[in-house]
Length: 570
Image (tube, rainbow, N blue to C red; front, side, top):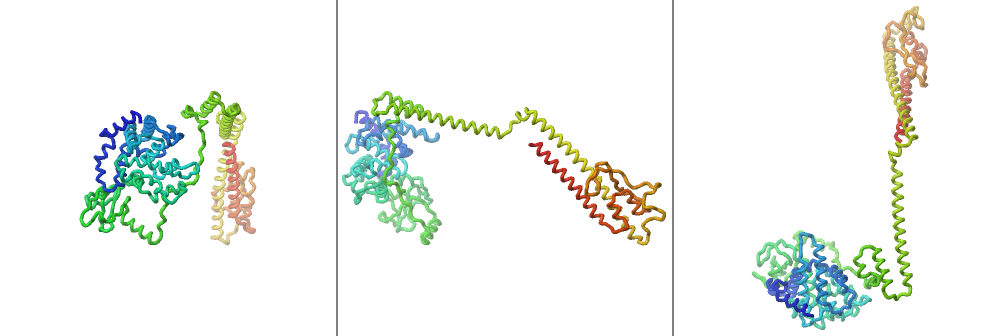
């Protein structure tokens, strides 16, 4: 490295505020298992640099923005370029984080830059390549382990999707610099047989075989990588039990239970440091738990397993296609200046400018310009069609909804509305008249029924009495006032056929000495025939028929009134 890189590394190592200097204060060296010790150190540095908040896809995007994706993996990366890359990573992170979680992008950039430079020089090499930057950032950032391994495979495979062993060996050489940087080189340092030990019996390794080999049959040199992710997943898991050694109520992270000692459980700090009490020994086999399950849940799972209801374990990773998807090469279209533009027309204009100013290598330069211009016109024509269609739909909607201003301005419609209102008033007046006539007719019918009942009661009390008085004729007496009154000319008669001829109706008052013929004088033929000496007719039925006729007439008038009202509303 040049002088700037050397000064950055020296200041990183000497500064007591750097994560590498504060690792010793965490007493990680007291952990007796090297895998857990290495995972704890790298996890501490990852959180100290805020790198656990950055996903692997954010790293990929930053690498593409810096232009390192189009550079050969063996190309050397300057310290200034690496600093710009890290600065863009943390600046974008500060924009995505909520206001309650604030970081200092500059401080995180300096800390991570110093650690990466220290890791690159941990084995005495002073050359930082593109693969070194990609490998270290992919391993140290946050995100899913499967996504990280897929990105690593895309860097160490060829165009056919087959892993190149030499590139994978190169990746291991760069990735294993991280354990060496935290003084764990003797346990997880690089050796020339590391790559072949990962895939000893496979000659053609595709993406699914690569993931199976790392996740299921993890090689020894990468134990710390998987444990780092498991440590990050379980560091917030709470176990509501107390440690058998330190007696702390509640455990965080991993929980270890002895397979020989009954109900003997240790927290992760006591187990990692070899603490034991009572009859328990560090030589006993322990089972690691990364989650808490209640005794009831254990019983349910045991019964389900006994009955065969437990589903098979899901695969460690989904199945991916063997051949990688071919991406579009847009390097000759997308310009560096046009990447910052959001408008499509500006991008087309920049491309046309490049074609006009740059050296032409295509024989049909003018055809391409004309094609772009035609495409632009076609897009404008499509936009005009869409706007015209929107305007047409808007006009149709306005036509469906009548405008009250236009309606009031039309004299023909006003005249029709005036006629309809007049017709409605006439129908309502006629309706009220018919109702009044019907009410009077019902009163008269009630009086007639009373008269009929009195006559039948009188005939039943004196059966031998003659029907007519001596010396009296069937007609009315000149000296006797007739018992009838005239109704209005429009009152309907008792027969089925309505008539406008004035009819006579009976009043309920009568003289007891009068006969039936005298009391029925001036009444219609149907009523007179009901009281004659001949065969008696059923007067009740005639009255019911008359009432039905009146009701039918009223119903017809109501229907006509409703029809006129409906026409007026339309």
